[in-house]
Length: 158
Image (tube, rainbow, N blue to C red; front, side, top):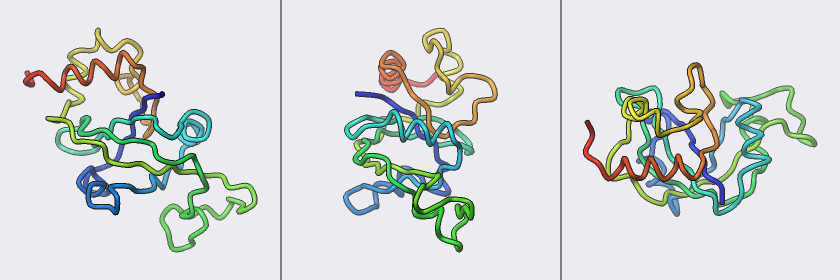
């Protein structure tokens, strides 16, 4: 099993939105970064787990856990001229952009904030989320990093 972190702005699509979806499942669409796409295409597998990370908000942080419930498949928004994710250069016979379906597993007991993880940086060796200038919306997480976040979830925030 692989572990991931997937970012979304809570005002656009937050964990509360996911929980209201049919079967608590939704396509993770709109990814328009090649590296993030490659993670979905080449690394993600059904059954993998992902942290749901709220970004661009008052308290950015990890708020829940999702399961990857599909293989990567073409993101239909790339072909929808009315979508903000439309890509006129994407070929239906060779789609440029992919998505996976995600399913809500559980909320964390509390938001494990970016600030808190930065304070604990020594225990997050090579965590891409904490690297300066990292703006990827999808990134791999090691098992050790995954377990460290779950340990922090159990503590009271400092």
